[in-house]
Amino acid sequence: MSDAGTPPTRRSVLAVAAGSCACLGALGPLGAFGAGLVPRVRYEPPLRRKVGRPSEVAEGLTFRADLGVFLVRKETSFRALSAVCTHLGCTVSQEGEGFHCPCHGSAFAADGRNVAGPAPRPLPWRPLSLAADGALIVDLGAEVGPEAVLTVTEGA
Amino acid sequence: MSDVPSPRRAPRVLRDWLPGTPREAADAVVGNLLLHALPAHATKAALSYRASGWLGTACAVLFGITGVTGTILLVLYVPSVERAYASVKDLETVVPFGSWLRGTHRAAAHLMVVAVVLHLVRVFLTGAYKREGPPGAARPLNWLVGLALLLLTLGLSFTGYLLPWDQLAYWAVQVGTRIAASVPLVGDATREALLGGSVIGQPTLARFYALHCFILPSLTMGLIFWHLWRIRKDGGLAVSDRVAADAVARARAQPPPAGRTYAILGATKGGTVASVAPSALLAPESVASVPNAPRRAAAVALVCLALTCVFGLAAAAPLEQAADPSRTPNPAKAPWYFLWLQELVSDLTFKVGGFVVDGTLLGGIVVPGLLVGLLAAWPWLDRSPREAAGVWFHPARKVQNRVFLAGLLVIALLTVVGTFCRGPYWGFVWPWDPVPTTPTRL
Ligand code: HEM
Ligand code: FES
Image 1 (cartoon, each protein chain N blue to C red):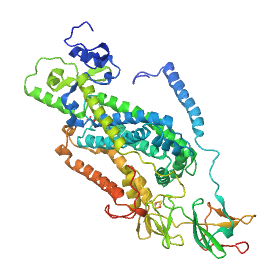
Image 2 (image 1 turned 120 degrees about the horizontal axis):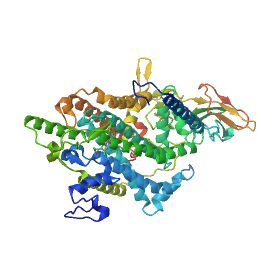
Image 3 (image 1 turned 90 degrees about the vertical axis):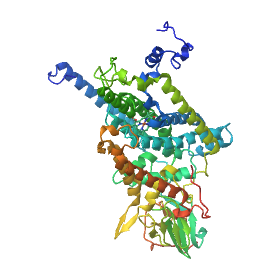
Image 4 (image 1 turned 120 degrees about the vertical axis):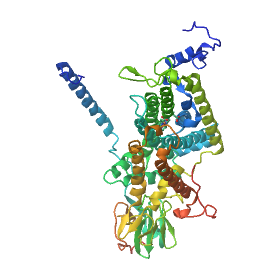
């Protein structure tokens, strides 16, 4: 380009303009191809998942590895507690009354409250509902309070 | 040129590497693609093991070994969620020498982390990042290129960790990407971009595969070439500047000898050769680069190769059970060089009154980010005189060297605690306590 002092010539101005256009033009396809990296379709497991028939759920606490939840049954009442640590997503396991996380040592009480370690929030309770065929459904994308209970009297 | 008689003639293909005359040694640097990266002469100090430990060369060699072993692994490994684990199992059990191949790739990767850190330590302790040298020299820039190489080395390790699709792989990525997600504003988008979705699955494996086998190695290779070219531009290693400065000082003290004045540490800027020191002054301190430099490099390469092959055989790369998203190994540990971060993430969550300090953000992002930022800014923070460049433990840099070593010590201690003193549920145990621990994957 022109040295300091010499005024730009028509040629140098055109060269800069053309070069800039070329660079801008190259950004177009780059952006278009890069957009492919943002997934449009996700082949991920659904958040609403079938748990099974209420009668198949044992009394007390059951860990369901496939769902990442603990099912809590007290006679006819059902609840589901997430087993995914609210810190960085490791799966907690039952330890005495409550739950412990193997990754950074968070501990949770039986009601999901975070009582020790780096976990910032309690383990969330997941809402349960009944499908038309009578099966239990857990919604892993929603959260309810520990007091929300699904009561099933028929076929439990 | 070849009609200059020489006392000892090597076969033509080898002549560059085994020059018989000073003339052939000089020609080699100009006429050989591989050797032209070298200056014609180098100071004996710069070629010594004492000045640099040749650790940078060791990094490059180890990177090369991961490249060669990785290329074979690339052909045998299947980057699919269903088959990745089985293909690695096949490597361990069916492929001839597959276990050794995997072990050697892994050993080279781990040794590379060690070598890169040691290289950084040596550059720091010798103050070799200081702005000095011939016109056009910019060692602080090369320090930044080096830092980028450090981050790339760690990135290569992290992405490679997922590929076997076993338990530790899965959970390391789970935890690592959630740490990324803890960054305000851009965190979630970063995690999604890394995972290719909201959960770890096939898109994640494809992304990590591309990063590990193509994107990061290409970037690393490019930066290594830039790094080495910068050393030329910076007038060789910083220790050479000392030698040159001493030679000039000695010459000033006495009447200068008649001599040629072409630059032997010659760096060109704007088309003119800037004379750093008259070659006559430096001649007693210098030797021809060829064959001295390649000979040492070959020695370093052989040591690296021997170490990786032996380690690869002695410490076979482990393979846990296949990845199981519902069951976390207990304790779940990151690879050893990330354990200090896992310690920080675990320890830095505490309550001040009603306010909870978020250890994930603090230990996983803020502290390492600050450390890297501080290292990057260090050449500009270092106010020591130019005499402190290229000298081990220069008195003028005493305080900063101590701060640096103290920081390293803290990281080393955290690593040791994370490695040996963390049992089930990340609880503190003494190494000699009989607890059922999953050993750290080395
Ligand atoms: C893949 C990683 C790396 C490779 C392959 C590499 C390669 C090299 C080589 C071959 C040298 C010549 C001297 C020697 O062998 O010690 C060198 C010098 C140097 N490296 Fe690196 N390096 C890497 C990482 C780093 C890092 C992490 C830093 C620091 C942040 C760094 C900063 C420097 C500087 C400033 C010099 C010039 C030293 C002097 O003038 O004495 N490099 N590097
Ligand atoms: S993931 Fe549970 S404590 Fe960190």
